[in-house]
Length: 287
Image (cartoon, rainbow, N blue to C red; front, side):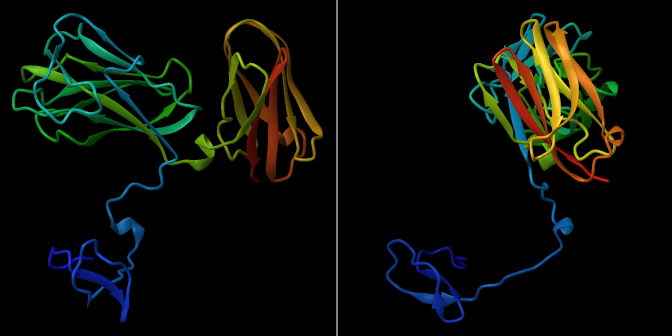
């Protein structure tokens, strides 16, 4: 803590100095204070377990329509300047493929550079598990920071997308800069996976997790494969052979119902094998 702004101030607890300012010529204790407050009283984000930002220069962002130009206003996110487009009939839009790691609830934010001629009802179109929602935000203000679009349950597939459309009724232009996806669920995004071999498929975290009694296990194959999907306890005993057949390339999902096997609360493993490769995920049954 430096109360006077100079380099000579020193933090102390009681009479014990805590740090020594670089280049300081004097050591003098100053008052310190520790405040304990309820976390909900502060406007802070809860712990973030997944944080992904997609910039307009990333491969997951594509532009449709002509007329997109670079904004000359500083403060854009990342290394790619903000892009602007005149308001119109919706034929111009920026598409963001978000590709979250597993199905579940995520918060979505948007970053832009504001200007007085920006639309105050820019459409942010979100495709998610519940369908399609359009959220209109005022881009003439609140620039140079993350603005909340909302919280959505995404499927964890390529069907999850966000569009910034030029179909606005006010202002001269809309801005596309960056989209941020956050998860505050440690179980949703941090389940460990063990893997072996050259992997040409993906195994997603089960959802919901924890679960009682049902949960969905999803995976994606790059090529057609004979797959084996099994559930085990932590002692390695197989509880259920969930899937064992030839599957086409693409996205697949399987329902697992713990009530059919009289499972107790605890951690269980699900193992997906295809060819000489396998992936293992962890899930929690909570009764």
